[in-house]
Image (cartoon, rainbow over all chains, first blue to last red; front, side, top):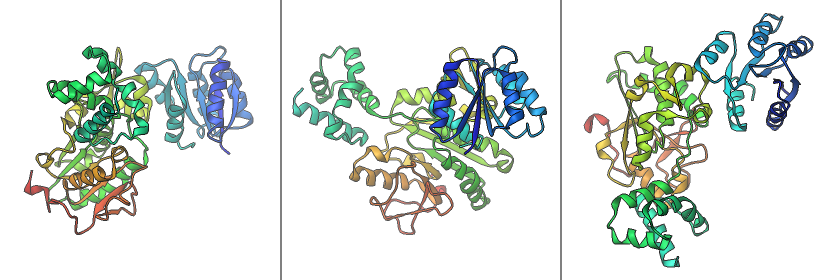
Length: 121
Length: 284
């Protein structure tokens, strides 16, 4: 079973994302910010990360840069999932090594299509 | 509304668009035609049926057909047919058409244009292999309003996220105040036209690939056969018909063979009982 880490400071978003991804037979774990997420990745590297941009302590962009420097950190497929919906943010995320980008609000179909796009489902 | 009015509206829709609306789907008339009744100042579906019967208002008739037509679509819908188009169908056609260096592709029930633009994006990625080729993408829909939307190429954030890889969004779209707009290059690449598939199709010419997806499911058996034959008649020799993921020619026609590499694509068997033309060079 593939493992997806949901990184978002909103408990509601984490809960919604978890439900969507568990319905796709993915194993899901959660982190509230980039620093928690990095610690989780050092313990067990996920297959995919659904990543918010704006979070306290460490934001999604910084997390992505740190993740890609970790041993094995190039492997997880990273899908940004954020309200930062302008071209500049999207281009910046892709340049930093994101694999896909979801603009909030999202629904199950959008998440499914993006995870399909990166080969997770 | 009397049973006679309901029957009239169902027969009207079948005659104008081929849409088969079974008695169990009568509620759709109420739901989808309510805005038209309001805008036209008509009190009821019975009044609408009366106006349509009189034949006095052709615009109203067109609006009714458009309102009852399903426009559900998305970029790269179902993924697999587009992957097959890029990896299997187009490379074979590029080889087969090397002499004429011409490709024609038709999105036959184009709705708001996502299918045709998806094809245009694939062809843009294949540009080096198609240098010096003439490539036409024709996209048709029964509704003038829907065709106008498709031509404008404006899509909401929700629409661009349904199926469109972010890489292609960045490459082919510009962000506007109310959403995303397809690049002028891709808009120029697609020729959108209003076309009822029950009307004569000869003036469209012949095509190497015809997308006719998620249309047959709304038609009764007789109309399916008629549309399949008419659309098939627009295929050039060696051309491919692409159907929706839940559609098949089984039980409708024995004239088609499913492609072994690309299951959404079908080719006419040797003897198709239709105005099947050997080469589009004869009509284009």
